[in-house]
Length: 120
Image (cartoon, rainbow, N blue to C red):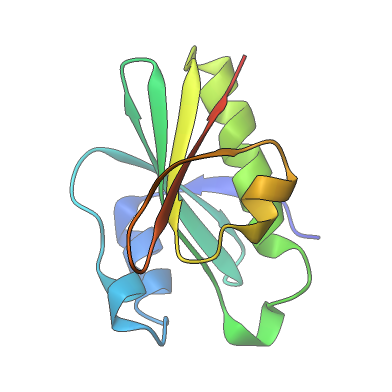
């Protein structure tokens, strides 16, 4: 698997615009940390005091199912831990992986589930 690297918001946005889903294509506003695995996957994270919010994760369709999304998620969690975040949050329509890997459901809407876990 390619090395995970920090990228600029512009490069992250360029990769997101390859997304098929219009919701994913929206570049989150704010001061975000962006990570990428080549041109195969991109993810963003916001840090608000001691809470890391995972904002977007997109894997190019050709490369899905090969662990790139999980690798980016685990990398972001490690980065949040290193920077002193106490909690991590994510909102997703597909919570199965998160629930199986130590995340706790905190809120549910019709289309999305918010999950949280301790970083320390």
